[in-house]
Length: 203
Image 1 (cartoon, rainbow, N blue to C red):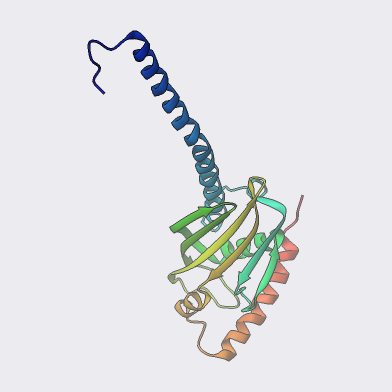
Image 2: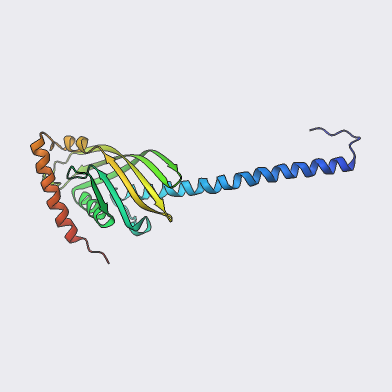
């Protein structure tokens, strides 16, 4: 706003004071938003780290990402059921996956954070280079997608809900052809999980 040459010193001081008050009020209103935005971005990073554990050659430490009593809700589990799995069981799944697939990558397609929740739409791509659920190596390069919702508690992931396209994955591998073949896969998956659980030793 242009000032008249006749503007009194008192009026000038009042204008300066009011401008300063407005700037302070604006800065004060933005601080909580900046803090909240930083928290949401940190939550997104946690969810991304969690998913990157499925990528080959990752160096993510699970203890820095998950609480000790972490629960993972899988719909479906690799046995075709609805499962609530512990952190140890999740590590078993990841270990079994890496033993069967190579050159595994993770792509984040969409990610939204609100309050203590992060929702991520992801795509996995990998090459089957070893036995998986009783299926010999096919050498096939496949991709499938899913959605994971993570609940953050004390700067770590406390709980996850995962929905993934198991049928697309199994179809691409050529192992899902009939209900009977699905039951066979379920039996093989249960056996593999039991074997892998014995191999993982917690410190």
